[in-house]
Amino acid sequence: NAGVTQTPKFQVLKTGQSMTLQCAQDMNHNSMYWYRQDPGMGLRLIYYSASEGTTDKGEVPNGYNVSRLNKREFSLRLESAAPSQTSVYFCASSDLGQGTPPLHFGNGTRLTVT
Amino acid sequence: QKEVEQNSGPLSVPEGAIASLNCTYSDRGSQSFFWYRQYSGKSPELIMFIYSNGDKEDGRFTAQLNKASQYVSLLIRDSQPSDSATYLCAPPGGGSYIPTFGRGTSLIVHP
Image (tube, rainbow over all chains, first blue to last red):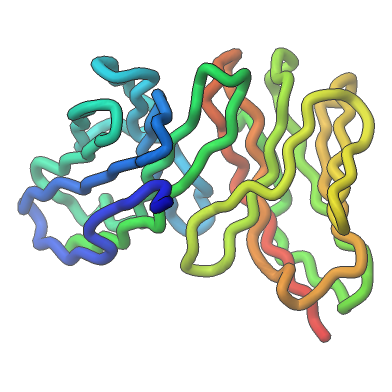
């Protein structure tokens, strides 16, 4: 059971380049999330998808777009990367129908924008 | 005001001691609380959750919740060097189900 899988694990971009971070879960969870983690800032929510077909902004959505492709997959796109987007990105999923569920995290994508 | 407050530490304790990690939160509607552990360079993993006032024990870990004081803590007994990590407190925030994370407390257990 793979859980939550993120690709790529590492990425270096130049300012202005675009890229898509991929996330897939095989736990049949209905909710998926994208967080970024910066030193001293903790985990901050970028976007989330409560269920297939819905997406909503989190705390820090500017500069990002998301797509909930199907129940398994939730991608995060940077249209024009900026150095301020250098961070570690975590995708997570949860089974929202079971009370207040815990999050299951992927291994993260370490992004550097130069 | 950030919804979840944690002392960033580092909290340094000797091996075998009790480590006490604390978290305060602002949303009185929060009903459940999660503690995640994050090793350096790794993703967070759930170690404890608590739904009701009082204590919940799981092995060497005890979570304590005081809703009146809006305070939740995690005690680690017989601390081991392998417990050295950052511990994240995460109540659902803003009256929703979406976990809101504190900045985390770095714990160092030295031999």
